[in-house]
Image (cartoon, rainbow, N blue to C red; front, side):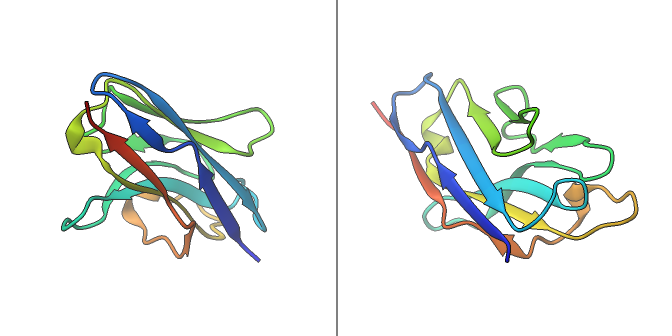
Length: 126
């Protein structure tokens, strides 16, 4: 049973930083893609980053490139999303998602994710 649990959200001032965590169970990153999405009120869900299962390539949306960093520690669990230089427009619910298994080399940016966490709220405001 695939489960994902996000944590680390909160209220931060513009220019500040947060680190989100996604603890997961029921699958291995060897065969599953994992990613971060966000959804702001009244807006569509946005894919912001993902790590591919086979080659561990990491992808970022243009809106967060250079400010956000997705990573995993040596144990592979949890995965993190470091949010730096935060702006009010970054305010959203942030979701961790996974999909798989994949036994061939396919990049995570082109697939639909089937498994989702409950989300964690990030609010950027002075």
